Length: 600
Image (cartoon, rainbow, N blue to C red; front, side, top):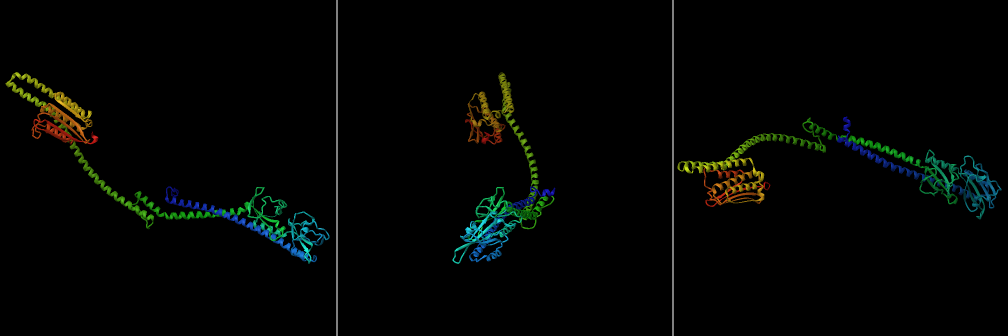
């Protein structure tokens, strides 16, 4: 299982590099083998084509030179002959000459050589109608004779299928033609050359050598083709090319004209060599397959060497990975840094430094965490203490509020009742008759104080400011004030300030109520004015003004806590309180509270 995992490129960088090397080596080997095989195949085919062309030219040249040599020898004999004594010389020099004959100018045979290789020409017979005689009168001539054309052309067993007649004019001392000398060519040398060439081209005998005339008729070749037109394309000599025969076989064909003499009869012959296409490409394909196998073996060897080299080169990286994994599992204290200056050593040194820095930072973080925990504990105790003080301060504020409310309601009512009780005591002693009226007045004062107490309790339970906003609550309170006192009054509030309704708005509402009660009880005014305004969206101003008797705002008033309560309430919400008053000049109470746009 570990071996399989080590070979998985998704789990091992070394395996990925090895597989990459193998893939590259295999790809290059296959590509190189295909390319080299194709190139070698084409080269071998081209060499085979060139060799076939050269062999064809060589065979045609050899045939032309042999025929020309025999024809020249016959011509020389005809020019110097004095009798048949030279016939034996020609037979010994050229054994392939079947018979030799000498005819006079009239076409009658005057001498002949009855050789054993072919039939004889009888003396006294007329040969005037033969091609060799009529053509020989005009010059050297060679003629191709088809098989079975006459009794003189009968061939012996084993004789080659192509027969030919050679002739030349016989002249006297003055240069006049006095006769014709002729010989019969049996072509033994041609058969031997064809067999040799076929064996050279292909030891299995698949190559085929033919001799054709200009019309494409096969003169030398297999029995099935002899005397028939060549079934392929009739073409003159040139670059060998592949031809498809009627049988469906494709063959490589090379043709060359017989050369070596100026006689027109020789130039009428051509040699053709052919070989099946599969035989032509068999050697090329075999070479391509060998190249392919060699390339594959070289690629496999290269891949193996590359894999071993990659494993060796990445061994340090694998050791670094194992060391880092051991540190990650807490099995080792630090990363092992290998020796050297390569990238692996630099990477290991960097990892080791990062690990040391992380451990140092972790130690510092633990120390800092402990210190923070200690400080948090101290701050928690301090917050708990402050929270306790805040709760106590809230209780004190609530007590002060209740005290202010009691001062504004019950204290005033009790003072009024106390004054009535004192007056009743005095009346009881000095004017008993007016006592019932004062008792009725005392009852009204007590009833008014009770109503004020109930109103204060109701206001403690119901928060009109939070429900309707500061503007609406002040408007309602000011209307009740006007109805109760019958004073002339004016109330104005900005739309932006009317909706203010948090805890500070409640305190501003209590301050306004206290100022209105002071006007009602002490100012003896005829007119009152209340304004609630905002300035630039950052300040809210509450202004309460009357035209009463006024008072000295700076003079101390022991036992009176109304103004003290106003200052305490302003300080509680961070507002600024200004009381502008003097005797016989009225009073202006202004409360300014700094706001944020979100509060309005």
